[in-house]
Image (cartoon, rainbow, N blue to C red; front, side, top):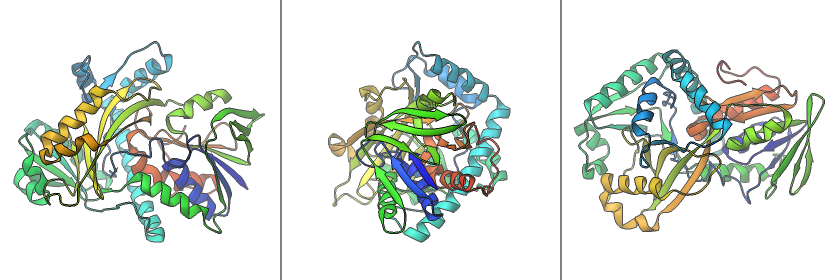
Length: 419
């Protein structure tokens, strides 16, 4: 059976891996010159399996109102005459109801913990070099209210098998000495020991290389800009691209934020809208003081950013901007990240000028969970809509989609994860 995967990001490449292991003849196409050049290029690096709280929660509504008009706010809407944006925003508000937030939290944790299991199996088999660490993620909380709110969410998540540890500011400094230079006083921390970190770009590229090796039956076509999906009756028949027309028996849509644009061509509508996120990669010199940069992955709750040590680079990523399909780098958004590096790790300020700057369009659903599996077309399957958690959920999502294609029941419940 021939499978055509649309998209060579982490979602498409991991799906190709699992399908090729099952004997499928797999082809991957992408408009970029190599794998992992969009959302899988320079994200925050966190495998945050314990992160279950979606952006759509009751507190987000008041925060969004408070942040309205502020160009340095963690969440920003650039409102425009865009029916898709307004439709998505209406659905987002509905998902902010307590009952919906609770359901989405459970769904995301179910998928996250399963992805952790599958990621461990995959790394045990392949041992891909990607600065993979299993040291947990430390959540930084600046006030008692932040601490109490975070602990309430963490307590709720324990019923789904997610442990956490409370840490005082003093204990946090012993765990991560680099925090001693932080300008703001640290009230306390929550540590999530199941969480991990790794470089998504190195992982995706290394996995693609393994798939090229003998016996894996995976072919790659890059610089193939998709023009049109061709449907015949109840099947997807072919994909027309700048590199030619591709046909297959089975198709997998893994084009991230661009998925809804192509699916509309064949009458399938998915509630996905691009959420722009930013990152900076700060180069770390060899002779840097041991406690100048963190070694453990950190999440700053107040500013909605993350820090991850990926080899000789400190990756800082975060903020959310709804501005349609706009890839431009906003100086205001990048300045937020620069300021936070200076405030948290002032010894790194001299290296900011050499930092790599980047933004991507995260494929976000209103409620948070991705959309996986079957569509109204019998031979088209989805692996898209992961939002900020594409890296975290990649392994589990790919395994689920490959199980469904192969006619097997997924190992976890699909409730809340289907179209």
